Structures are given as structure tokens and as C-alpha cells.
Length: 427
Image (cartoon, rainbow, N blue to C red; front, side):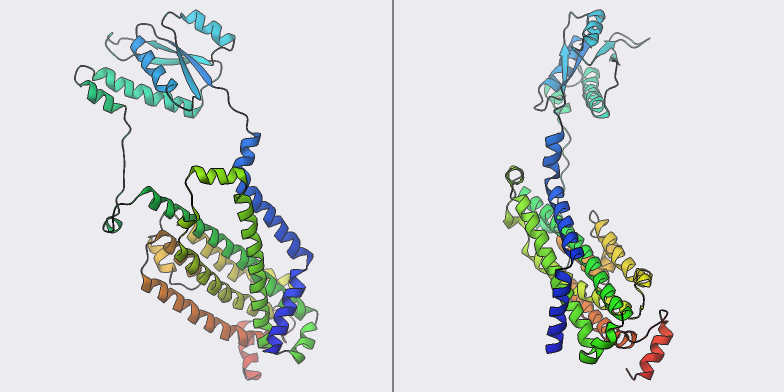
């Protein structure tokens, strides 16, 4: 036990004060700060776009032009303003366009060969084309006006007013409706849970890759410099392996705490606090079950991957070969990250359900299901038990590989050679 504590303390002291760790942590803190404040930073550099003014050559379609003007000028965000002057001529509108008083004008005129009662064609004249957003907005309003124009004699005023109302599309989850109606606060809690889950998944991936690579690199470096031969005479290989794993775990926790503090400080800045107040966000909206189970899966997932990184690092004699050796573990970690991140919109898919019981993917995919609230208690228990059994199995196997691999030099040994060495050393 004393030797294990010694290795843990040595690992923390040597890694915590290294320039690479401090610089990497500082860079990530800066990136987190920029990411949290990015909307505010963009708002500082973005200039207010001038309101686009568009004239209308009504002709004999004054009713349509006035309705078009009311639809846009009554909005709170007046990015587009429709100016209607029934007496304006096309020559006057062209002069206003040349003088910069308007950005363009719409000409309403009867379509060729159409009857006077038909809805007019619309042509936009300008020196610069309208943006896609503005053009879509005008087209949508004109589509409603066309429907009202065609059906004006067949529909009542109330029915015509309903045409302007957007279609309301609500979703009712029958399982949730048994417990009562779903409120806006419930929807907000689900959004917050999804955000927390994504943050935990990203933290798991970053910590897993950084600390895992550090574990493998340190073991390989000690082995390539022959320091391992001295260490192994005073500390057992098992104490070395698990001491490094636990030490790196504490190191990762310190780094995560620094990241969380940086995010919290930036979120509490006045401009960010005001944004949270506008959306009625409260800290009580964070589901404690998501956070608690997220921590459980984070810890179990870390130890599962860490034992594999330590085992692979022990069989590599040169740091140049380390990247290729840990590639399979890296691919597993990437797969766990991508399956969860790309399945946020479909947490009930068969891929997510199956992978939530696969130990290398369950730390992220089961957490995704927990955040969505679509899981049963027995599924979480089974997933945790599978993870624990996998950690014990991988830890047992990695310990055997580690005890053998740290004293095997030269080219990277094959699995057959490792097995022979285990038999020779009676491991």
C-alpha cells in the first residue's frame, strides 16, 4: 500500500508541474472562455445591419401592396421595411434607388394573358439581389395574400384571418402524459440535461485521450530509458501500473475542476448572466441523476481505458512506436464519442441501445439515454455491472501483460510472444 501511495504521489508531482501539462491546461481554459463568450464577442464585432427598404409599385393592386407593408412593418425586428406610395411612378422609384433611399422595389402587374381578377405577378428590381432570408419572407407573405385573394368571395373574414395564423404543431408523449401535461419548464429541463450530457461526453473523451496517452507514454519512456529496471527492484509492477492509473485519474480530476471553474466564472459574467435570465434558466433545472450517473460512468469508463493504455505502453520499447500501438484503443474511444454525439437527436435508436451495454461504448451511450430520460433502472444497473466486470477482466489481463511487457525490449512483441513470456515467468 505504501509503494502504491508513493507511485501515486510521484506521478502527480512529476506530471502536475510539467510545462506541457500547464500549457495544455491553460490553452484549453482559454478555448473554453472563448467558447462560452463567443456569442457576446460576435455581437461586439458585428455591426447593426441597416434596415432594407423596399418600395412597391402598386398599380391597380393597392390592397395587396398595403397588406404586404402591414405584414412587415408591424414586426418587432424590422430588418425589412416595405414602403408603399400609391402615387409613386416607376421613374420616381428608380430615382430613389439611384439615390440610395431604397434598396429596390417590387412591381405588381397583371400577368401576361391573365384576367384582371387574377393575382398579379411580382418582379423585384434592384442593383443587388435580395438575400435568401428576405426573399423567402416576402414569398411567404405573398403566398398567403394570394390565397386570400383567390378565396376572398368564398371565405368569411374570420376564415381569411385564420389563413394568416401559422400552423401549430405540438407533440404529446403518451408515457409522460400519464403523469400530467408537459410544461415549458419540463422542455427546458430536457434541453439542460442534453447540454449536460454533451458536456460530460466531451469531458470524458478529452480526459480519456489525454490521460490515457500520458499513462502509455510515461510507461514507454521509463522502459526505453532503462529506468524501469531500477524501479522494478523497489516497487512491484502492479503497484507501478495501478499507481500511475490512479495518479493520472487524480490529475484528470484536477484538470476537469479547473475547466469547470473557468466555465462557471465565464458564465457568471454580467452579459452571460443576463442571457440566462432571459431564458429563465435556473440551476435547479439540472437533473441530479444525470450528473450523478454521469460521474459514475465517467469514472468506470476511465479505469477501463486506462488499464488498456498502461498494458499497451508496457509492451512498446520506443516512443516512436507508441502511436501505432495505441491506435486500436484510440479508435474505440473515438467510436464511443461519435456514436453518442451523432445520436443526440435519436437516443432511442437500436445502435444506441445495443452499444449502451457494450463496455467500451456504454460510458457515453448509456449517459446519452439517461439524459434523454428513455431508460429503465435495470438497464443502468446491468450496464454498470458489465462495466465493472470488464474493468476487473481488463485489469487482470493488463496486469499480467504489464508484469511481462516492462522487461521485454527490442521490437514490439506479438501476442504469441507475450503469452510465451507469461508462461516462462509463470504469470
